[in-house]
Length: 121
Image (tube, rainbow, N blue to C red; front, side):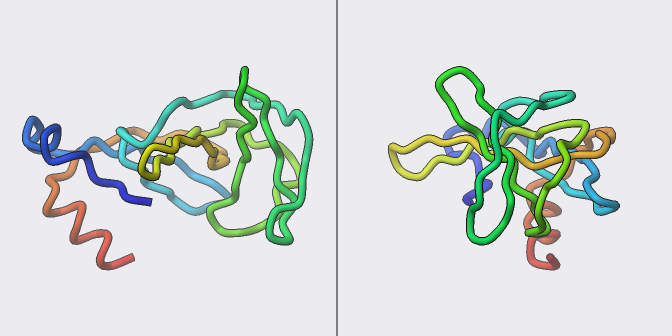
């Protein structure tokens, strides 16, 4: 997924705001512009198997949003939070969510710092 803001918008900002959350003891950082919603106490409408993993699906209006473990494990029990992320490819728009045990304070980085961190991970 491309995590960059369009050049026309990026020029308006000096720094990138990063949401920080924890899942299964691992810190996960996501740029704020990729987060569509943070849902406390999410409820699975149903579970389905995707690529061999048991994935809960949330029904949010017209959308069915999979809760996908970023460490590629089964999710047998719903998390305390669902971090709903935006995925866009050309003209197509979609939503998926990462599970979270707890939310942490967001922080800011310069774009140079953000890109340097991406090279390390």
